[in-house]
Image (cartoon, rainbow, N blue to C red; front, side, top):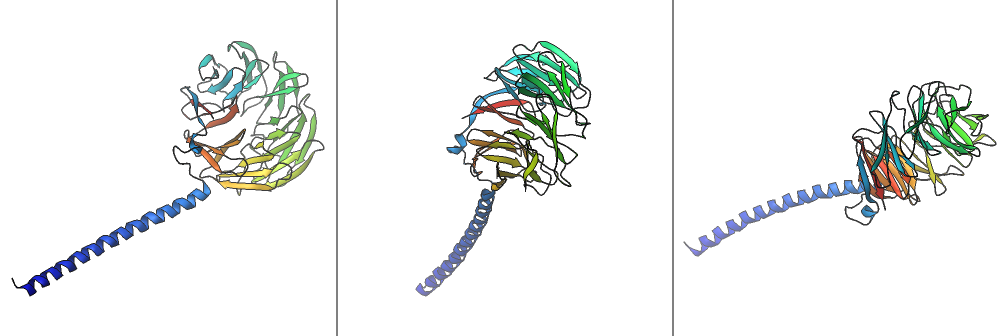
Length: 384
């Protein structure tokens, strides 16, 4: 082979290798472009719901304290009491758990479907059925103490209210908006309020006032001690309320069908402020802390408003509908998309996230532990 031919062959080989090299580089650049696009999309999502890297300090802010397998879905959230927690489950029963999540007693309900979570007051646990049966059992043993029948149809469990003359259990009938109060000691009727209208949301109380919103597009206020009517505060057209209300420091907070968070003053009774928190209905029960009122909506937003003026301090969009909120010292907990999400109350920054289940009961904060339950009945406590 002549030297000129060798040089020609070598040149052809170099050209072919160059083409191959260029192809490899082109494919590499395409892969990098795809990865860069995914990274940018992830950054855009992180601006909505900041990611919590596994194993980071933020991810370790809360860790499992205990868990209990109830074996059936819960009816309403877990309820704290001095000796631990009480949960209501299907089929109809109450189970008491100690502070480590171990069961201490169980009581089976024989009077129909439970309407919701029980109330705890005066050393008793009081459960209510959808057709009006109230049953009180001893909180330390689960043994029955008394049972009474209250007229009406019910969508929520009873509410424990402490006034100057002791504990009472108050129950709101959904069909006609009547509040009934019984003495927690023996189930004796204390008072009943006049009918209002259909009332799907749960009432609230601060020990001085009782309040609820309903299909009247108004907030109804009563004295907690004797049920005497205080005021009916109209909220305006399309402002029906079907969610629970927060009553704190003589003020009532709740959301409306029109997506507005309202604040009503009890005495003198008037509408203090209102602010839009959703383009749809806003029926999540608000919570308060750090001088703010927190509200969630179906679009996945958590909104923080100044409790005195209603001014929006921050709004954070999570990725799923908000079903419940809870303030636990320096953490605001939100349930969204089956996850328990810990947020900083001052600015809404996401600091912690834990998958729980498709449908979550809770969260409830008590005794340095926040407790939730999944749709399979696993109850879990989380501690710093």
